[in-house]
Amino acid sequence: SGAREQMWLSLLSGLCLRLVLPCSAEEGLEFPNFDGKDRVLDITERNYKKALKRYDLLCLFYHEPVPANKGLQKRFQMTELVLELTAQVLENKDIGFGMVDAQKDAKVARKLGLEEVGSLYVFKDDRVIEFDGELSSDTLVEFLLDVLEDPVEMINSAMELRAFERMEEDIRLIGYFKGEDSYYKAFQEASERFQPYIKFFATFDKSVAKHLSLKMNEVNFYEPFMEEPAILPGRPLSEMDIVEFVNQHRRATLRKLRAENMFETWEDDMDGIHIVAFAEEEDPDGYEFLEILKDVARDNTNNPELSIVWIDPDDFPLLTTYWEKTFKLDLFRPQIGVVNVTDADSVWLDMSNDEDLPTPEELEDWIEDVLSGRVNTEDDDESADDREHPDSYVTEDSSESHDPDEEEDSDD
Ligand SMILES: *[C@@H]1O[C@H](CO)[C@@H](O)[C@H](O)[C@H]1NC(C)=O
Image (cartoon, rainbow, N blue to C red; front, side):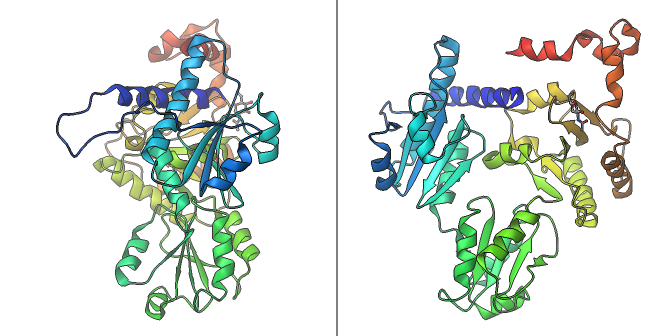
């Protein structure tokens, strides 16, 4: 979609800057520059099987045919550069990188099961993991290192336990088992299906289990920002029991947008809309607002219809101006609104005249209005169709009283 294209473009232009920055003369802080060595393979029918066999991980970018247009070619080369730089940084890991052309290599793509052009697929053992995040070297390196790890992390000490308890932004599962040769195996098999997006932990330690009130062969599921975990029903659990539970519960009431799976989150909308909250955690207002949001999420955790996407603008510096323009917002303040994912039309809760942030009750009322459709992105659209009457526009919008679609086009 157009929005996705635009996001990629702005992300890529940030990368470009990074690449041409000169290195400092002092040692100890040196961003990698692409050294010019080709590491990314051109995957064809002749070499794909060998590549699959040779590496622990094989990371393939499935792309449209290289365009004839110069500008588009540049864009393609920048994507290639992201992969080259990632390959260079991870050179001492056993990871292969390759490009698969949707036209030239259609047969290979079919054999490998690549479906979505513009996506990146990671092959590990007999699994395929789709990367649906920001295509930047930073994000990709982090993602691939996560995929290289074991899918289950062991918790053996009080220190590890504290670290586990602080990970409130993540979906986490933890199970207590007798040892490697036990029902742990089913848990491990299940974990592989969600790596690296959902974190799996296990303990064989009695005191850790006691601290978490875990019984033998029990598995707990922690939804982000919730204080109490849910206990998976039944003991012992089969792989499918766990997989099904996770699939049913993975859309959290409050979830943070992250570079590593931002497109996946965005595509998982609620009947065409998202409730989006912008809040900078490091800003006092943002922090306060986030605490209110967490309260509301905890109160409504059993409402399957509700999922609020929290975006910390600090995590997406390259997208901030795009969002401010698209949603006509000031992102230095906390904001919450409804976004239609088809056309990015949006309405935002008016918090501008208030000294105070909304109370949890006020926020809950507003969310109820959104879920019932009383607050929606369509009601104010009438005036936009009625172009003969410029009076119906508020002054600040008067310069944009043309078709909003036109505006989108002129940006390209
Ligand atoms: C989102 O926008 C599209 C296109 O303008 C419209 O057809 C659709 O009804 C809207 N969806 C919602 C849930 O408002």
